[in-house]
Amino acid sequence: MKLHVGCAMWAHTAWQGSLLPHPLAPRERLRAYASWCNSVEGNTTFYATPSAATVESWAAQTAPDFRFLFKLPKPITHERRLTDTDAQVRAFVDVVAPLGPRVHALWIQLPASFGPSDLGSLAAFLHRAPREFRYAVEVRHPAFFEDPRWEGRLERVLDGVGAEWTSFDTTDLFAAPPTSAAEREAWEKKPRLPRRSRALTADPVVRYISRDNLQQSAESWHHWTATVADWLREGRSPTVFIHTPNNDEALTLARRFHDEVSALVPGLDPLPEPLPTGPPTLF
Image (cartoon, rainbow, N blue to C red; front, side, top):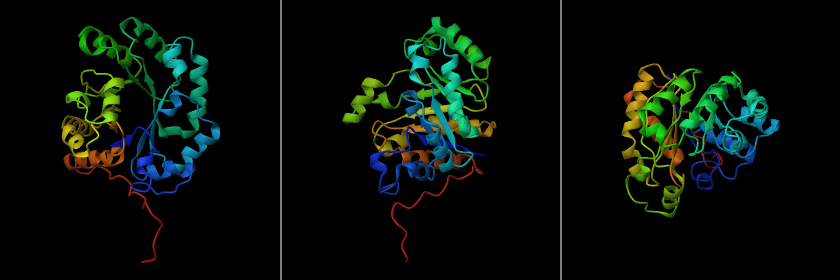
């Protein structure tokens, strides 16, 4: 039984030398990160499709059961809004296909303006999408969270093709006024939506955004440790990504989240042993 946890990136300046080895060649950074977490968000693919050589390097640095959640490129989701994108989707799928089962899902993050009137476009897109991989859809229009009618219709669209509704939870971030520059920036940029924790498939995905304070973050996620534990007991295979506004403690928090779920679900597979941050010694 395995829980996958991860962060929004695998390279972050604040981790170098304190949590991850430093110096570290760029083509070794993912390997070091994968000694801490067994999943990662692929946010960079929103802006640029990786080269074949880059994808090959990612495969070489990770175990076969490592999970990537790759965000579909911006032209597909935000510029064309899922319309007339078959060739672009096929090209993207072909590039990441060498990663095989490491591609846990293709992540369709939709703009806040993508609302109920666009559900036909989403349904058509999902029915045409290549079937090599599963899909996880993240919506940000308030109607899908506040109106049961539209929530139900979206769920039926996703159920029809076995796609998951990504849970993007910012409720703890907005629970109190910001106390740092990074938190103030997150307040300006992150969506303020109700928490949603209903899994549609055997592979639920959670993106949890907390505060910069490590202890405060860990004290705020009890809803998710309990929910994820229940999913595991039901035989589901969840993936949870831990964010903070500055992400300085995100690696530590991801492992702490895994530890707390492990205490609730005996027999959960452990995470890897992190690589030492410094060179090996003789004594």
